[in-house]
Length: 576
Image 1 (spheres, one colour):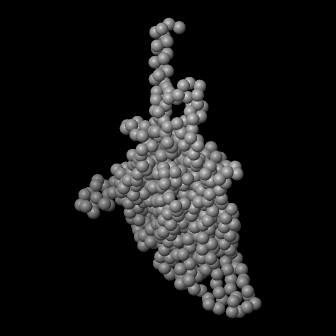
Image 2 (cartoon, rainbow, N blue to C red):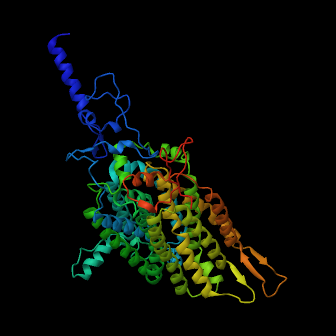
Image 3 (cartoon, rainbow, N blue to C red):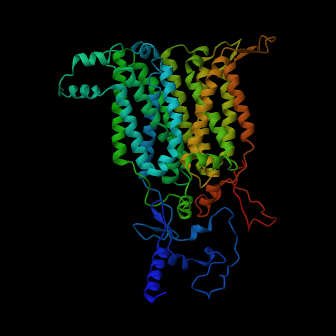
């Protein structure tokens, strides 16, 4: 080998060895950086420059935190600024509340659109003869489930910012397919601006049989599919948003807000839709209001929504960046997560919760009327109260879980409370008759106890499967919850026709309970006993504990590993 050729090879090797691998906007340390790393980080077989070749580094004995990666102590360099992450403290930014606000509003709008015709089915069915409100909602929900399968890979490829902005634009476009762009003409006219008149014959042809200001059915259908495809990007990403932007003692609360704000969308549909959509023209104006609201939120999203903060908010997020692990495609993530110890328990609790809230919300009319609440406005108010209860319960109980990390204890308490609060929704005591006040109170309480189970167990699933993809975790839960809910609907309809007598021989205690409530009670009992077996390490909480972020409030237990004391191994589990 010639001398010049040897020099060229040496130079090439130097370039290759000194180049770092880019990971999620950051880069792993270069070879020179690794040589200067602390000995405790290096493998026993790593040969650095501080000792002669052939002699491994010597290590001082010290306690080992089993689940805390030692790679956290290595340095990480930004592509823009040289940053030693061993000297950084996790930091949160005020922008996180703007992020949460937009994601919550987008979730609200998506479910408002989904259930927009549920509050006025007769008006919709009169405007679009041969098409039912229920079938339109079914189209939305089936599109939603299909879209859940692409959310994880889309967010992974394009990032959270681009994915949310793209989904919000798709939802806004779908709204205008449902309302028509004439809503702009009405707004401009109110400001004294007149547009050129459209061809009357074309307008009449487009809206024939559907009301003077309504778009044809194909446009309603196309718009509904667009919004249904966009919604999972707002439903499946709250745990990712919480992990990316919020501190370890804020995540359950932020996830609760973002996940449950769609319930406010359902309440909005009943309150506003019930008042506006009383005629075909009113329905057209109602769709126009939704389109304008969606356009404004979408504009704000494009202007203010960001991808991630300059500095991660928690030790666990910094450790994930240092590890540089690449998540597999969604279907591979599903197989991996189902094999993760402890993952199925929060999944079962999530499915139980979303099934109860979906079914009670869908049949709220029947539940209220058989309990003595027959006024339609009263029914709408009770339904709205149920949805608001889900949100407020999630914020209050989620805040407690953020401070204590008692996922298991709180979930079990919520399941038990939900079990007892379900009973008044289907029980009639013959001596007392119907009790509307008790029914409404039970409904509000059910929202506050059953609803929070979803965000709490979304966070628990992310915790036990750390460092897995948060979006994949939530996508699985959403698919499972919506599919089980859909399968339960026909069973609930059949069961609701059944009445079961209780103590009929005793006139003072005789009562009866409806079959649909019995079915939900059975689902709750089964979930409680299954979930009670949960006993898995909280891996993300452990990573956060390495930097003292959670202090003494961790639901922890010291155990022995391989017969040795806790100084050589410790595991945090949610046992309470």
